[in-house]
Length: 243
Image (tube, rainbow, N blue to C red; front, top):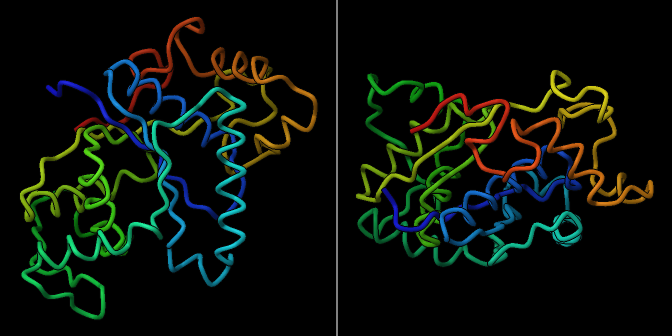
């Protein structure tokens, strides 16, 4: 049991903040506040798969827009981080943990898979192990001990924990939340799922909707007790997996 709960919201800066983002940020902030810890927003602005599609200046514009949208909703981080600014610290940590060697010029060669770890082989196929290694290091540097993510990312957890175990890093608790759908509160929001509908927070703002109105709709759609806190025990759709 942790004395304090430290969480993070880790969006990729490849677009504007949508309602699924807001949901995840609210839950992460809620758990950090309940656990008297810190809540970090860490922008993934160095993802090489996106840098060639979205210029870094544009990613910085998206990041600032996310900060503004979150602030409009009352979500204020204790710290804002940019992964591009932390690359040297990550590199130094990886060098130390890997005996002073980085294979393939700053890439980790993932060797010695453990077949009896659920999802591990699939996770290695689905994810770039180097990005997961970075994520583990960044979370450790910030003392993140509760990782709350969407269920579509559940296949990465075994790979994440494998890196923790091989490097002697304490495993953060993980929770994977069910994706928002039309099932709850269909009459309150046109589309809740982040993959469909006009669900950008900026669009709600520009339509004249007040933040309290949007938050009320989200609470009614997502919380068992709409007057309660944005904590996991109050979500209508419970985490699909905890570890």
